[in-house]
Length: 452
Image (cartoon, rainbow, N blue to C red; front, side, top):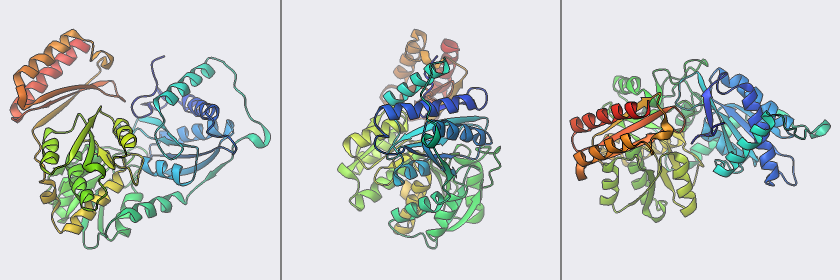
């Protein structure tokens, strides 16, 4: 069996790759592994379980809850809430484990299971490996000790989680948003209630789109992966800015008043300067990934700030931040981590802080984001290829070397296997957009040829 856990939990087509049996088995295995690690010692184990609005989340949630309770874990069902809300509540409620059912920005048929450790932090790789091994042994018939009587877990709904999380978001804001008109695209996802409530309580005039989840329409032509509707709505309503989330709302992308996109690099740059002014950007350092635009790095250097780059994936950004105590990090895709207030990317929190900066300074988001100039960057997803051979294919290595020779010192190339889908991402950056497109197209063809 190949490794089940990707960079962001276990994902697949619900009821095909990710079944109820698997969700139950993984939950039982997680409970056993954490018990063996001493996490539950001296008290009854407690877990927080949440989900996004996908239809499949209904039966997967039931399976996860059943698995945990059957292993002796008391469960608080918080219902449909963003991933960062589940992480926050796991810590705030003193839970030993958090479980989020979501496939984030993926299409509706997919779903996923993501575990959080005590405090709301993502599980370490070695714990995920152990969970997978225990799950596999149980799946092949190895018996496990089942509690009975009063030893089984109890299950109850925890509806207070919604208000508790919104109050947390409002408390973080350095200033109110009174007088600010903003459009929110909720991707028909997990933040459809939370985000508009938080922005409204903060004083903003809120217009929502993509805020009517029906279990089937999540990420469907809207949200952070489809910004067209948001761009049009911001211009139509004369809003100061727009904020877009993905299905589980751990991402935030923005649109300025002209309808121009503001990506994760620009958001990080704006927030970095704001945090430095308030004296909370520790060591004047921002952590980002190798996917960050070269223009982002140059902008931070001009402002006297430092950039540390990690492998792609918000978990690697978070690991670097936790190890060295840095306060701000994120990805170009819109995962932004403010470690003093969140243990994972939080799209609603990011959007609130971005809006707060606009209100505080009286400047437009377009003006604020002008601190950095994005170099032309082309990203092509090449699907249905063997992503495991990206680093071992001689044919592909030769194609990359040729591309790098052509670009010279004015650009760069990055090939990255997706951690959650069977595809390879081809990124090319160059001083000229036509050159970037040409090189990226040739590399995408090379990936198909070498790995297809």
